[in-house]
Length: 324
Image (tube, rainbow, N blue to C red; front, side, top):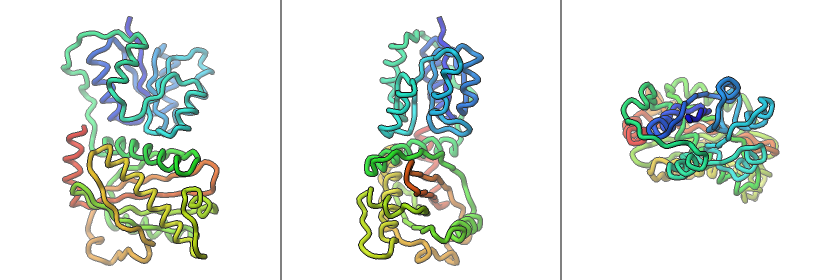
């Protein structure tokens, strides 16, 4: 008998890859949701047997779905497939009733074994047209790659910090230099207590810059927990160290995902470095990835903006062609 399977994830790339795998080899009926609210509605109306559930989604995240599932009166098998690979995230999911936890990008062999354990019948089906209409554009594709990298980066920071990091939703877009300049100046001037850091990086023909804006009352304590002590009255020293680990953790994770090593320059205070009147900033368009990390109990917010110049776009497209 066919199994009704719901893929509840905001990533078109996940919908595509799961559809390709499941439709090609298994006797299943597939349903889709892009957030937890849609997911609960699909579960209630379609007698869903198995849910592949993401944790980081807009509108309603996976944790909230797990909390609300008991109100539906019956419980499908819940398989978490998430980029949030913090140990605490997995523990909380299992405590809330999830049956399995798989990290993104998922291992197809592990998933195949899991489906076997769940008695999902294998069939022989033509590969033709199994994912028609599920094309993924570059922005959506990179958003999922960024999400995976953020999850791994958050796990690195969480291990150093000994505290759960709230996983952000990455915002991936393109931005003109004038808009970017206006945005950065507005952000810096809006909060005189925040400190902005700039750090350049390069790898695989991709040149970019990471801008980190830290704010909150517990920045120094946050740094101490990460192993960075303040040696003078100027907290910029510890802020630079924090910014460095925020940028490096993401780039290390991104490097593992797209198989390109990155090198970074020493981070410095943004206002001491960024010359927005320089010609290289006046007429370029940037590919940007933006997110905000928050510690669960400390008053610290870390907003990070990665921007890659137009010369890197062609190389980025080539990378995405190999992954899409």
